[in-house]
Amino acid sequence: MIDFQDIQTDLLARIAASDQPRTILKTPELREVYAGIRNAEDKAVYGAQVNTLKSALEAAIATREAELTAADIAPIDVTAPMDVNAPIPALLPSERGTTHPLTQEIARVIEIFGRMGFASEESREIDDQYHMFETLNFPKGHPARDDYDTFMTVEKDGDGDPLIAPAHTSTMQNRVMRKYRDQLEAGEAIAAVVPDRVFRNEDLDARHEHTFYQVEGVYVAKGVHAGMLIATLKEFLQEYYGRELQVRVNPFYFPFTEPSFEFALSCPFCGGEDPACKVCSGEGWIELLGCGMVHPNVLRAADIDPNEYTGFAFGCGIDRLVMMKYQIEDIRHLESAKLDFLEQF
Image (cartoon, rainbow, N blue to C red; front, side, top):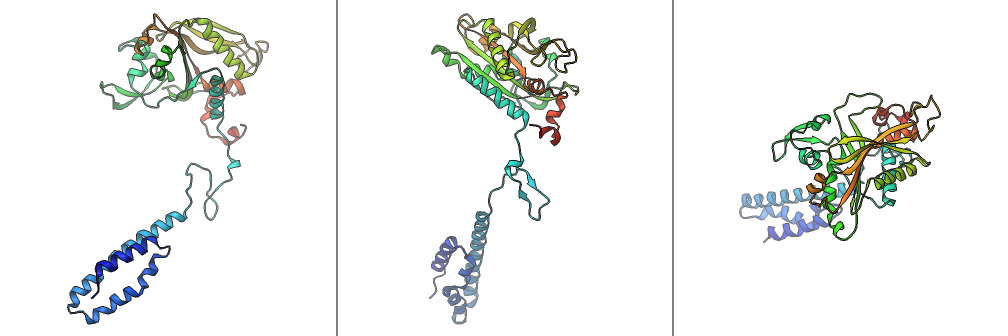
């Protein structure tokens, strides 16, 4: 008497282990099963059992063939450049591609600050208004919130406020200070930079983009003063541009720093000696970034005692650094995807 259950269990196991699962349908066991219908006492019942067995084997074979087909296909990086005109689309040689100039320069910025003892953190592309404003001493109703042409989403946070696309990487300042706060008790400083994308509702022109990159820096410890801020920025910029620079600071206002400054540097190309200089227009100085000493309220928001610790913070547009370095006349080139521009890097 044929035991259909034993046969099915055996054949399913052989299918699962076979590289040619469809050949299992030609085994002697199955030929014996098919032939047995002639001598079956109840041909209807026997035929139903045969059909059940055959269906189970066909399903198992289809599954195994799919597994084998998937195993034979090499994974493809869908972000890699493809030769779409080839008879069978194929990957282009990797040496045909280059790293985007902004990516190159962000790596350079991180490398310089890394040698200066700064950790690097990523920002967020969607955040809440608490981190964008309130942790930075912009309470609700503060008029300075209107100075940021912020993109709002229809989705709301737990307080019912629209989520936002951050207008500055300062949105990470509170998180960075909380993440590294234990270092203060160990006698070490909080030192981190946040290079990432930011978004502003700007009118586009040669100097303004709605999406660009900014590097935020924060340093907190005991005895930090403005002279350390100026020395840090000067050292970074001289290393980045590869030459000696003069710097100056002018008083300014930011809610999250006190005192606050606009930081300018001498033109790294003409030193103010070329009236036709495209970078500084012959003025010799370039207003580059905002900075200052971290406001006590910002420290308190991160549960850091401003009576014991002080710090400085700065924010600089990376696109602007790159434009000055390579004398790029239009910021829109950086996001244009024009190969004749990108291939220069």
